[in-house]
Length: 266
Ligand code: FES
Image (cartoon, rainbow, N blue to C red; front, side, top):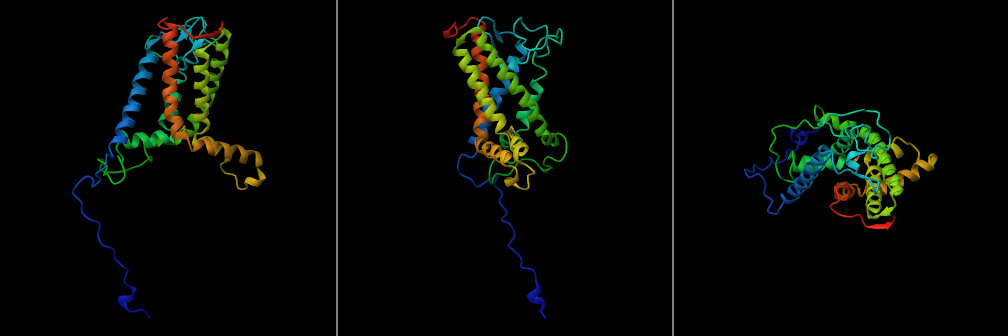
C-alpha cells in the first residue's frame, strides 16, 4: 500500500508574477498596427465609394465596378443593370449595391483569417504572443455579437453567388471591345475566385464529414485542390482587398474621363 507521501499530487511552482505588460523587446506592435491601417484604408475607401453613386459605370467600355454590382435599381445609370431593374428608385442614402454589400461585408468580417487579424489588431485579444490583453474576461464566440461568426458558411454561399455575378460583369464587358480595363476586371475576378474557393468553409463543403476519401474520389480530388489554395488564404485576403480597390479606382477614373482606357481592340 502506498504511503501518504507517495500518493501526494506533485505540485508545480506558481506562475511568475510579472508586473510588466510584456517582456518582449521586439517590435511586436508593428504587425497589429499595419493590419489596422490596411483594414482601415479599405473600410474607408469602400464606404465612401459605395455611397457616391457616381463613377461606377464606364458606358463606352462597358466596365462596371464590383462595388455597384449587381445594380438592380432604376436609380442605376442606363446600361449598368446587367440583371434588370426590379427594385425601382432607391433613396440617395442607400448604396445601389445594398443587396450584395451586407453579404460581402459579412463574408469578410467572419472570415477565419480576418478574425485573427482584427481580434489581434483592433480588439487586442490578445495583441500578440506573450502580450496581455486589456480585456478583463474572455467569452470567445459564444454570445452576441461574436456568435454571428458561426454563420460564416452561409456568407460563403452568398459570396459564391456574388462572385458569379462579378464574373458575368467581367465577361459582358467584352461587348465594349478589349482594353486594359477588361484585363483588370478579369484579374480581379480570378483573384476573387481564389479567395472564395480557398475559404475554410469551402474546404469543409468539398471534403468535410467524409469517412472514407477512397469511396469519394471526386470530392477527395476537389478537396485536395481547395486545400492547396487554402494554404494561401491569408495572401488572397489581402490581395483581393487591393485588387477590389484598384479595379474600382480604374473604372472610376475611366468613367469620369480622368484617364483614357488603353484600348487593344475597339
Ligand atoms: Fe476566409 Fe472563409 S473567407 S475562411
